[in-house]
Amino acid sequence: LLYAGYIPSSPQKPRTAFSIPLVQLHHWLWQNSALPTKAFVDGITVFINDRSTSPLYARTLNGKKTERDLRKPFTHSVDLF
Image (cartoon, rainbow, N blue to C red; front, side, top):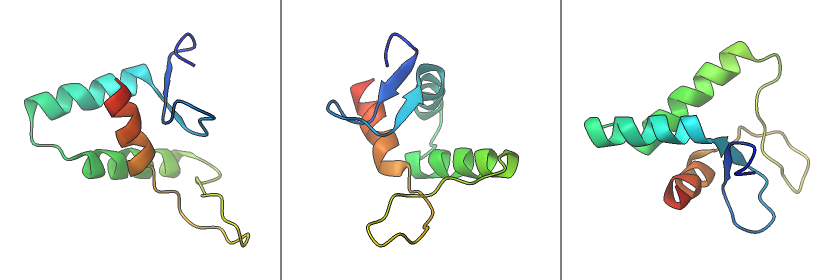
């Protein structure tokens, strides 16, 4: 994944990865302003969902579609960065 330009959210069997430029953007904004990670992820999620024909859904055991919470996986990727 790193060779392709992505940082995984977990070291073993990652299901989510984020582009290195996106993580770098968050890092720069975090260093130069008071932007919380949750606000950044929420903003990116709204931005992506507004431009996508199919929104992101989480995997569930019961088969119900629920919105995906990317805050935890993104935080893990930022920590790896």
